[in-house]
Image 1 (cartoon, rainbow, N blue to C red):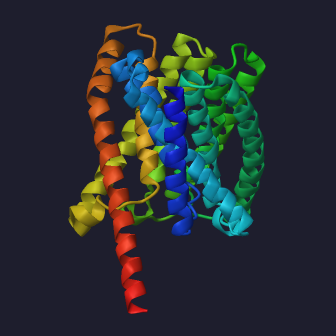
Image 2 (cartoon, one colour):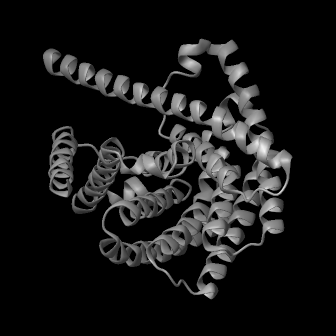
Image 3 (cartoon, helix red, strand yellow):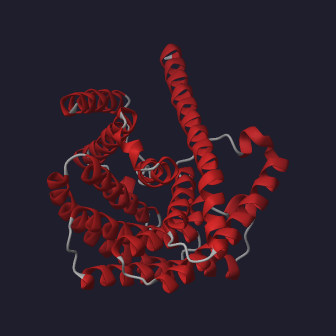
Length: 359
């Protein structure tokens, strides 16, 4: 079976990289959020809903192979931008967009977890070191970006800043899936750094929306759902590593639920306003790379809730509702997003053909 998986990976990668080269695609900095979303849907959502037996199926192995092939293809696009000297303008120049590099680390972490749990653990050990090195570089450029935001008084900040927390906590999950004895000092240090980034990022986001006038239709960003997603992944990292006791986990989960309800309440109000203003098609069914962050954050909240140790009947009831109802919500969001991606690709192809015919 492993030979067929490797062959499938090679064929998928060749197909994907050929498409990237043919159409000269340089991925958006945050495009790796799609890998984050696919990965946590598979490793967290599917695992909780179907159980561990799901990963013994050929269908699960094919899905993992597709995710890894897509991840490697995206990295190839990033390396091509580096060779073509477009990396800085695409991914670094804008100090706010720069935080999107955090998706590269989190996506690599989830792919590492999938590979370690279901394929090649030794291979992932080298990946974990490379990912940690990238994280150090990312922390450095993120701190520089935060200083620039303060110095230039940049107002247009949003949830993308909290990818600093997401990427940091993803390393904890990766390490504890790859190594049997992770030093407690390392785990607590990473958790502390992640929470510090969260406090600082949240401060800047709240500052934007409390000190400046804004419109929910135009100034509220999809990435603001990372306000609760960053806490959810912190909770999952704490459970996986055993860093928090049950009482601390429930406090963190309660805070996550509160922020989830606030943020998604604003999202629902925003949706109503956008539909009234532009209709369903323009308001909802338009692809944007930031929409993957919603799938990721919903899936991470689902995973955090499902992994909580059950102490009281009310928690058990909430877990049951989230696992049984949330699953179908998340799957529906994934399918809608895939349809939007395919529609976008088809429209771009049509536009290119029309330009060629008119030239």
